[in-house]
Image 1: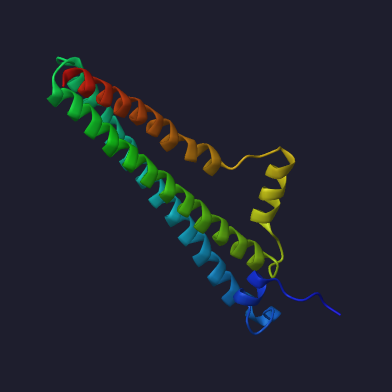
Image 2: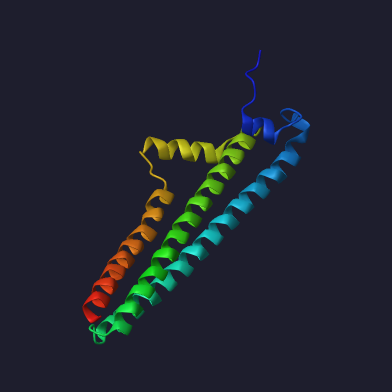
Length: 168
C-alpha cells in the first residue's frame, strides 16, 4: 500500500501522480515554477538594492546633520527623526526578507515535489549536496543586514534624544 500523499503532493497533484504520458505537461509546469522562482530572486535583489541605497542616504544625512552644531535642538530633532525613519525602514526590510524567504522555500518544496515525477531530480540532488556541506541559507545572513542598520539607527535615536535633552 503506497504512503499517503504529503500536503504539498496532495495540493500539487489533486487527481493523483501524473501518468508517464503527462510528463510533457509536468515539464512545462516545472519550467514555469523555475521561472517564477528566478523572478522572485530578482525582485528580492531589487528590494535589497533599494533598501541599501535608502539606508546609505539616511546614514549620510545623519552624518551631515551631526557634523553641524550638535548643541541645537533642530540638529537633535533631525538626528532623532532620521534615526527613527531608518529604524522603521529597517524593520520593514527585514519583514519583507522573511516573506521572500518563506515564499522561496515553498516554491522549492513544490519544485522538489514535481521532481518526484521526473526521471532526474537535479535541484533535490543539489540541495542534498549542500546539506552535506553544512550549508546555511543565505536568507539567515541576509536578515541580519537590516538588523545591523537598525542598531545604527537606534544609536542615532539615543544620540538625538541626549542632544535634545542637553539643548533644551
